[in-house]
Length: 153
View 1 (tube, one colour):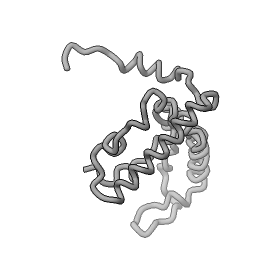
View 2 (cartoon, helix red, strand yellow; view 1 turned 90 degrees about the horizontal axis):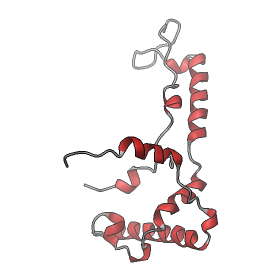
View 3 (cartoon, helix red, strand yellow; view 1 turned 135 degrees about the vertical axis):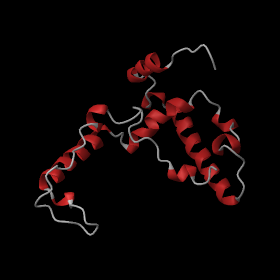
């Protein structure tokens, strides 16, 4: 059931924000309604890639989307704040993988995850000034919206 999970599911590229902003998401350009004059592709549909206006709008959208992404070098900065409260050295293989590794390849992946987490965890303990421990206002806002009580389970 979990085969390939850690290889296939990429980290959220907008982390610590949950996702791309709605303003950017809804600014995704729509193809032109008038397809006259556009060449037909091999599937028999209009080739929207040939439309210069749409191509320009897509490039602008990609720039806005890229501006909202968290740079890879900042992931450790945000990720470490979740590792600090835990006793990472005491974690078992099950804690990292969700099951006991069945072969040497899975064990190698688990050991790699353990080493990466320990490295960031130790660095955060030694140099806490390099990491952000301030609350994230946007997440506090989400807590107020989504953490609601129910009368049933």
